[in-house]
Length: 103
Image (tube, rainbow, N blue to C red):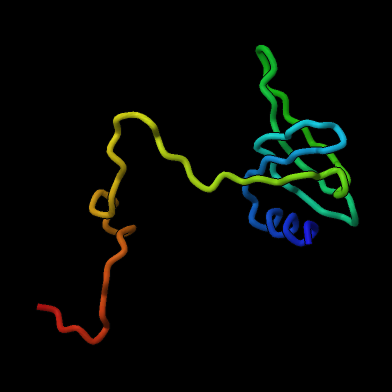
């Protein structure tokens, strides 16, 4: 089951947070590049002192204890969230009835 879910996340190309239970650490904002047998290849970046390091790591499927993905982000500031009327017209969802007569 976990293998299928990780494969789906790999196909989606979204960022994930993965907990490695054997090392007791989180890998944050990783992309799953490939799954071959029981090996999962991840790519992620770390921010260390004055440099950003890019990593590619192969881990065993059995080492993965948890996988998370961020669904949404909302600002906590005093900013009004955008509603459909604020979106560009091409992105607005409208209620159209094909049988309705335009006025």
